[in-house]
Image (cartoon, rainbow, N blue to C red; front, side, top):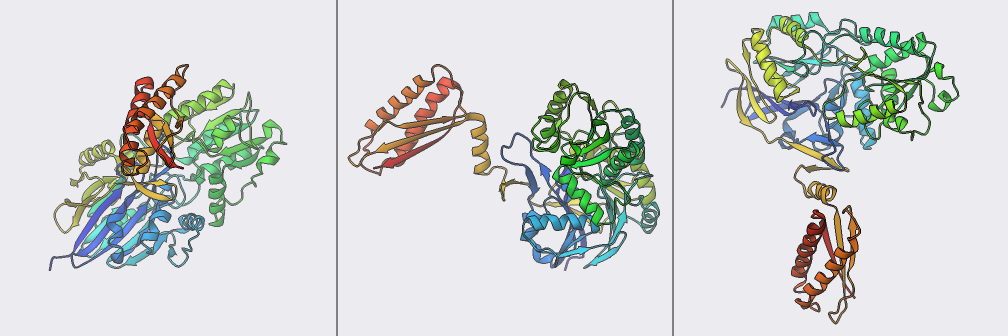
Amino acid sequence: MKKDELIFCPLGGSGEIGMNMNLYAYGNEKNQKWIIVDMGVTFADDSIPGIDLIIPDAGFIIEKKDDLLGIILTHAHEDHIGSVAHIWPDLKCKIYATPFTAVLIQEKFKEKKIDISKYLNIVPLNAKIKLGSFEIDFVTLTHSILEPNGLSITTPLGTILHTGDWKIDPNPLIGGKIDEEKLKKIGQKGVSVMICDSTNVFDPGRAGSESDVRDSLLKIMETKSKRILVTSFASNVARMESIFFCAKKTNRSLCLVGRSMQRIYKAAKKCGYLGNLIEPIEPKDANNMSRDKILYLATGSQGEPMGAMNRIVNGVHPEVFIEEGDCVIFSSKIIPGNEKKLYQLQNLIVRNDIEIITEENAFVHVSGHPNRDDLKDMYKWVKPRCIIPVHGEHRHMKEHVAFAKEMQIPKTLLIENGDIIKILPGDKPEIIDKAPSGRLYLDGNLGVDADSRSIKDRKNLALNGYLEITLIISNNGKIKKPIISLRGIPENAEMENYIFDMEDEIFNICKTFSLSSKNQEKNLVETIKQNCRKIVKDKTGKKPFTNINIARI
């Protein structure tokens, strides 16, 4: 029998930012048990019509669900918990999360009408759990959300530190500081591998503190005499508390706008956070207040089409509006890929003579991920024998490997999604195999492959338009004038001409087929489709998605 091994396999989040999903296994081929750390989503862009969320393909671990001990969640950001409710029904295993994360998980399952109470285990901060051969110690870190946890995963072969998302914030405002002493103790016992966040590895210095952002926001708001609208990530509860603080200091009422903002506020209150704050008011009540007495905090900081900010700026929000002389503060960074829609939104704000403040012209945001000096401190505390970068694109992870070598970390390993890595035993982790991995697009309520027919058809429709032809054939084989319908195809004065050309072509084709028999129907349909698409292509340059209907009467 082979000796026991400690295995690591990322199914998402390695080679990309988002969609984090990591697997660990302990045992041998005859008896190998697995745990999952995080199960996130990433967001689709405009190149995939009709798709909002993308989740990791979990088929590899679904096949091993009988040997799955549980899912451990490090924190409540969507790129770490967003796919749990979508994938869990195929696993039906225990879920372990700290209180704030657990509240948001419960809400996700309620939306799907699934009772998760028997499976969801709420873990106190800094607690330990034991799953099979895995002893998992939750370590309090700081990040841009409540209750971020690193995981010290100890097995009979050695210890891994899985950092999750983190930074070093000396004054996080809400929640505990990073548990430096606990990290040092873990390092003293010996850490074989640290699997570490790479998001800000290119950025020098430190990520910065929420306390400093609060001071800067207050100074800005004290100079404003009209409405102030702040937009930020709803999940950043420390930033939310800062806006409450600024509202009180500037003698303004605060109004929360957007479902996500309301949801996070209620979850934080339920877990005992956000105490001793002013009570937020309803949007309908804010409309009756003087412009210098109201402060809005809204979702939609990335210019999302259905986000509160987009609706407010475009004048279609039912209860909130802004006007000339007001001030909008984007207390967030631009997530790569969102630049175009966000700049469009910001340009519209400027055109309406509304003041705009962003991280480009003021200190209104700090990242939740470690810069290079933060990484140095973590290395110094933990003293890992090997660094495996995750949570980054390939360029981030390769730079993290180079940086770790520069910092005299003895060993490093560059990986990507699907790699099966033997962590222990051995002198150095090594890639020993490849697991199937990939992406599933959430198309409505269903997960489909990237090359699924529905995605291909929708892209084709978006690019080339739609042509539908209905051919009515009588029992004696005579045809009536075909019904031709076009959607999304460019039009001009000659539009009728090429419809007449298609009608003529259809009549000519039908003369070559025996229409009273159904035996040739398939060939008839294909011939009409090819020839009519060619006419449209010659006239417009578009090759439309084409559907041919034959109705017999």
